Length: 90
Image (tube, rainbow, N blue to C red):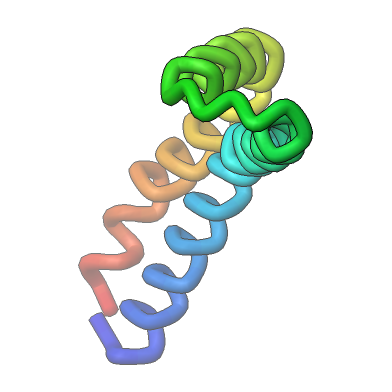
């Protein structure tokens, strides 16, 4: 295996990780900002007020985006396993 192959494979894996995690992290960020604004307006500083809605939103997002995320990960893994003999020849 060449250095170029390893770096390109690592780059693809990192981009895939960012792509798969972006919907969950983005929704959690949006909900966190909305709750922070609500807490600043009402001066309610309850920790569960920030924690519970984020968990609920992330779980709902996993249900909605789960099939898409799984399909992307399966495609990446299947391509990796199918091309494994070619990678060993490098």
